[in-house]
Each structure stands twice: as C-alpha cells, then as structure tokens.
Length: 286
View (cartoon, rainbow, N blue to C red):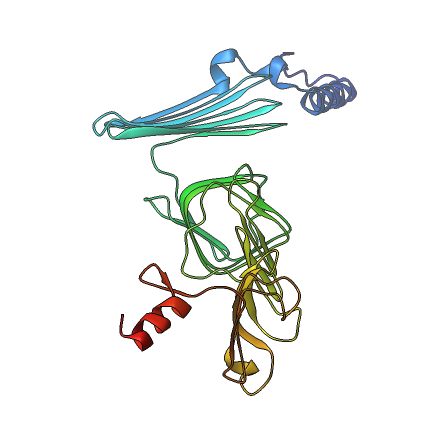
C-alpha cells in the first residue's frame, strides 16, 4: 500500500495524490473476491464451549455443518452439494440419515413417525390417511374396512390371509381363500373344481339346481327327472314332489301334486313283497 508523507510545499500535489489513493481503494474494494482476500483457514468457522462443538466449512463445491455434544455423544451434521443434500443425526441409541438427490429421497432410521393433519404414522407403524391410498399391490395378513371397492380383486393384486370388510364392491374377485360371514353378489361361479353356480333366480350345486324359471321355486335335478317345489303350488295341479319324471304325467314314476293326490306308475313293495301281493295275503289270511 502507498505511504503518505506530508509535504507542505505543494498542496496541489497532495490533493492529487489523495484523490488517486481514493480511486485505487474504491476499485480494490469493489472487485474483491473470497479467493483474493480470504485464506482457506478463514472459510472454516469453528466454535467450542466445554463439550459443545459447532463448525461450518465452506468450499467451492460443498458446505458442511456439524453440531455435537462430546459428553452425551449426540452429533448432527449436514452436507450440501450442488446435486445432493445429506442430513444425519447420531445418538447412543441409534442414528438416522436422509439423502435428497434429483431423482430420489433415501431415508434410514430406527422408527419413522409422521404427525400431520392428513397423515399420521406412530412408532408402531400404525398409519392413518385422510385421503385415498392407491397401490398396484397390497400384501397383508389382515385387512379390515367398511367398504372395499375395485373393478378387480385377485390373489395377485391383493395378498392377504384375512379380509374383513362390511362391504366389498368389485367387478371380479379372484383368490385362494375368502372367509366371511356374508357375501353379497350378482353371480358366483365355482369353476371346474367346485360345481357351484349362482346368479339371480338360479343356483346350481352339482347336478341339482334351484330355479324359478316356471314361476315358482324348484329344487330339481338338472334333467328335471327328480325334484320338489315350494308350498305355493298347494291347491293346484302342479307338482310338489316327483321322481322319474318323463315329461308326461301319465308315464312318470312318482308324483305328489298340490291337490293332495299321489300318483304312482309302477310297483309298490312292502318288506320285499309287492303291495298288491301283500294285500292279497292279508285278505286271504295267509
């Protein structure tokens, strides 16, 4: 730096010199950079009081912050890069860390809790959501709910041991096991292994069906050879009970109609003897 010495002989030279100094100083302070005026040591801020230590280190491509307590073994730090933010907290009981980058957030911790108006997660992992949870797949030993609605539920999409719900709405449900007190639906198809079919007005169990095709409820074999009807045919000529139906009342084996008539085409046996021969033996005293 220039050194000023007093020279009272020429005030104009003094004035010009001071003006030049002022211009040089103004230029210098307006164009200073940290590299020009700070050493590497000046970029480190370090403070300590007893067992408490805090530090901030600034580099061209990285900033590091740290606060620690050497007595309790607590330590929290943060590292900031152009493309990464890293946070870490360590205690004698455990540690947690989080890294935020452009494409992901990585979290590592012992217990993860959230306490927000629309979302809570407690230390036991119990979560409460105020909105809708959308997932490609849900795997759980137990699912309980008031209503479960879906266009399709299958064992691939929903893997659970127990599914408890007051109401399930789905266009299709495919699964290994469904256990519940009540199933409400428009159609049930058991497939090749379980011969059960159920739809409105029709239930099939093996070779027998419950049907209302004829305007009354019938339980009969699929070929209609054997069956029974409900009491709404009482007082009519329609059949209450039949076996060996051939499609013709005159040739069918056994019939009971709503007029309390029993019709049999065939032989009746009593203790291995035809009823006709048994009656003849009783009449003849044999």
